[in-house]
Image 1 (cartoon, one colour):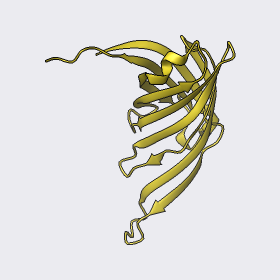
Image 2: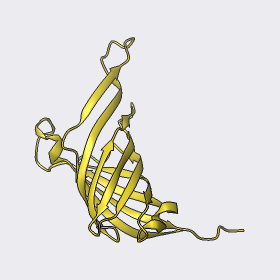
Image 3: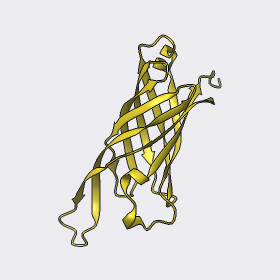
Length: 159
């Protein structure tokens, strides 16, 4: 299996809404689950170039890993509309540059990009918090996300 670089998407969340659920039988007050919702705004550059918009509604597990569930679209510079579905994990490490891994599916009616309709892509990315700013002073729009998206190239599996 090989990976063919497709595009990089850089975006931020202007705001992040969250609900924190605690175990009522646990007197420690530890957060056990979180549900989030955030709109994404950004840009793609590469073989696909254009404006990126989406909505992420991840679940944060007790191990602090986010289960990403981000749907949106790319409005390409040449006028095509490509719907996107990003799934994966936002790891809780390393601090300040948390890792993101996942998969992407695309759907479009554009003849130029129709080949994306049956392609599976990978994500290797980071959540980049501002350096030198105390965590309690970091605002959501200051946190930048960068995903490198690559197409999985099909190859004959071994016999």
